[in-house]
Length: 368
Image (tube, rainbow, N blue to C red; front, side, top):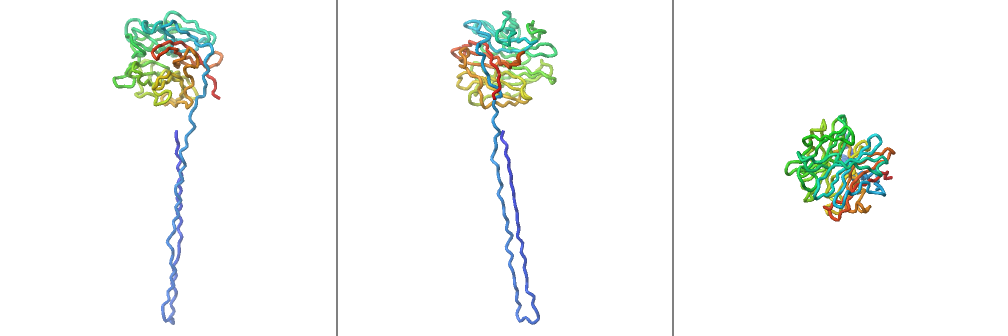
């Protein structure tokens, strides 16, 4: 933000004079007149003094991310599959994770699995039975993925991506399911709560949930979207609002997009959490050169207007071998011992389309 300070001063000074005539007496043979000429007023003008624009210091991240030395905490399920896009929350002192998994990205549908950890995320017990899976009918007939879970008056609510037919990348729908406990069972609504935009809209190709914010005013859903996943067109972050958590209205324009640099092409997959009177986000970016996704930091007072940190990215691929191609933000949680952890996906595949994903964690520590 740039502030301009303008100071202008104008001084006007005028000098006055007088004219005197000599008195003529009766004995004066000639009239003598003495005249004093007054110089014109002198005006002194002080030119305006302009203070040069002052830029506020660029925002930097208040956190550093320290990857766990024994990552990944959820390994790949097999040589052709992957585990990715985790959402983690604390319930009664125990960490619960929901994540997307596929045994084979080319031949099997993605499902949502549930896992628990009683040692602050270092080890996990994964339930082999899906918490949610496609049931052969409706908008999520083929596959489900990318769950985000919130506690509401109605119990636990999960928002997730749905795909009715096979295809690459996220599907065109966001669904909703409810449960009384983290282990389920989960009951999905028959219809999606959010669809892709119309042809020509920025989110006409896919929509997938990233974070859900619930307060007394209703529910806000931060989601990723784009026009064409396969063509590697730009991805953005969008926001939809709802009074009841079911009927959502989109804010028309993206709330975060890229222009150039490390996040010039992709701005998506964000882990959002309350911070400093507003909302912080670890979001995923990728340059137009497609050299690998990395994680940066942004802050917003209202989840609509976001300021990105000048020291981004904070977590890059190749910092650990298991995540040598991409790192993708998942969710942030505070553990029972008071630590803040970011759970994220890491890809060690040899190409952008080889999804060898596993799940790791990094601790948030003060940047100072």
